[in-house]
Length: 165
Image (cartoon, rainbow, N blue to C red):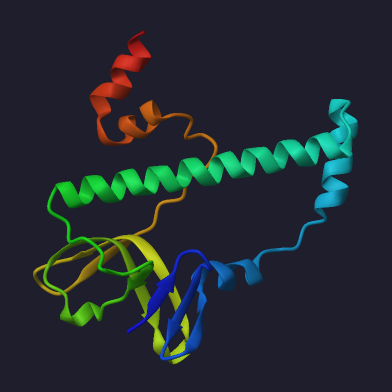
């Protein structure tokens, strides 16, 4: 069984650390010279590089918080609607063998490939009666501005009402 430590964002199986999908994908990103980008942006906007970097850091932290809250809201809503809750061992999230799970919806499910020692947490896995499955992973960003915006994701009527104002 894979164990996920959220504080360290690490996955372990029998004492061996697995590479997270996030970490694996980071290795595939094209490297950017953020210092140079900040310098050009600061010059264009009439700011100091330090101001630009501080603004980027603040926006990143706010975005992470909003994304975490949004994912938690989705998870809670899915469980309230009958999804299977995740099983925790203290602060550690446990994994499951997909082939042993009942048909249904599983939010925040750890999925893994032992042969490659790669692991990740999917926002939602739906296992169908025919044993096929659908995996969803939602990305959030700074466009998610408030809890009202989060509600609009679940309730299209809320979104329409806000537009009518």
